[in-house]
Image (cartoon, rainbow, N blue to C red; front, side):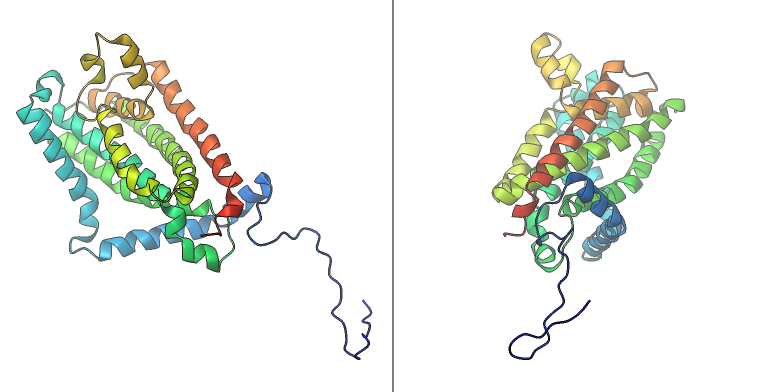
Length: 293
């Protein structure tokens, strides 16, 4: 390429094609966005592990709090609802029922609260680097997933050791697809709330209250079917809650060793992939706004 001199005698900069280039922060096509996100998968995992280990170093018990926290919640719920209010009388193996409810619900609630504030928490990274912003809420879910897996192992051990001992059947293998579906759902809702949390910062504080309402409506420490047997319309609404399906599928497969109805699996699948599509597309459409913090 030949270089030309301007009137001042300086060599001009060779022209370069701008084809394929986009301004920093500009939203790219969905396919390119997904490709860029996949290319940064190692960054997402490394960043998740770094935040996970960084948070545990600040505590004397370190990783022990991953198990102590839900166990203390189980103890508190057992004392209030099981011992004082007598809810345990109508639930087979109330301790196991409660352990599964608390462990699995906290997995989603932490993904929800972390995802809501992920954009503002990553403000310095957004200003310093160019990358798909969806990596931030996804990293939050990955971090909680890495915390959750050893918790599931501890949960299974507790269910085996704490009486009454339940017979473990082949259906324990069905817990894996439930965890996968719940994780997919967590990614979708984290992305959806990340954009809302970016636009309305107060939502971050509000989510702790909303997740508490969600907790009480998910059958974590009582059987929804028994409490609402005389209110079929309300029972149908409560069963539509995604956490109801994830908790009941796990209890049926791990605790009681029975088959779950087909509609429960259908609900879990529709919620997982439906929320993923809705949440990710909603987040992607706001990509250009995340740099303006």
